[in-house]
Length: 474
Image 1 (cartoon, rainbow, N blue to C red):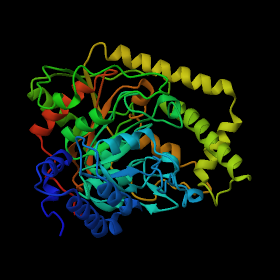
Image 2 (image 1 turned 60 degrees about the vertical axis):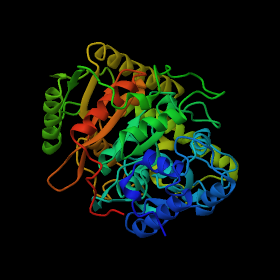
Image 3 (image 1 turned 135 degrees about the vertical axis):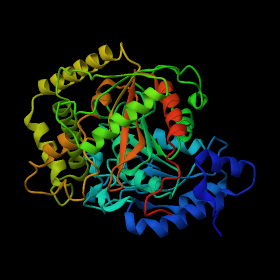
């Protein structure tokens, strides 16, 4: 028998029940597995199952941590020794990891029982989760729409209440985009707040960072307490927090200076319902006593151009290392055409182009640092259009010219905070007339997750979202 009240609790709540012996870790795992088997055939979020791994964890004994006994899912980009990790690529469909990622090890040390992995687009490249290997992950709010990407499987699983929290990562918006599209909470931490080793020192030139998506703000804060901190190979470290992040929950945020915009960073008009939602949230923030004014940073370079160069170079290296390993050139039977096109573009570029992109990212970072000298928080739409319809981005198309315009329309504002390394979060504060979630993005100064957690907890209290569930829900 499963634990029927499972869906009423966040992860910390479930852990407290285990600690107080009101429910067993085995009962929680059974319930998570039952929910997966009931819901996942409709949304396709959990693409790698290793229930036996989690059951072995329970048999051996879980470490005592803040989340001991809570079921958990890794994103299918993070290695976990002895389990399949595909990175969403057809060539790697049977790839068994021979070691743990540092972040995976920290999740294990927190006492989580890891029973599978969630879907990601191939190598996490797209803001929608529709890999050729596993097919589309569907949005629990409307199955014709995307749950976002690249942590689309994680966000869909949490939104559908398969579990209250799941691993996610963000190199250009990949925590915040699916959090917005799926109506859950997602905070991208400060650069280097969480580890990316042991195989590398940084992801996408320092743009990428790992964390979770969750139903509650406090789960996000407690998880960051559990997983943050440098590792021996860290090339740099994030500023130390003043106190544990969980202690920010419920702490008065004070009267914050909040700037906001309801437009794209390119100056383009955005979806009118999203623009109206931003203004509604700005008004709510004013009612909460914050100083709110309409203004936005001016950027010296185009974030999309920077991302294209940095990501292409990293993708090209992945392709090259794979070819060396298998002893032949890869084809579109191995990797998707978008992946191969990105790698091809990188090989046409010069090394100076990469350095120029790094310099442009620094200029954007400098612009944002100057802007945040006069405000504490910046509010903008996480996405400038509602969640994409499945199929709008086709990574196997012979003509990929549609990709850049869709990205510019859909998610033009997320990647600038990967370049600056600043913390930013998507908060589920609005839904459109069609019932699709519209996340609001808040960014703070480098190293200042504390302000975001305090503000998020205030917003969670003012406009609760925990009991707002999608039509397809376990």
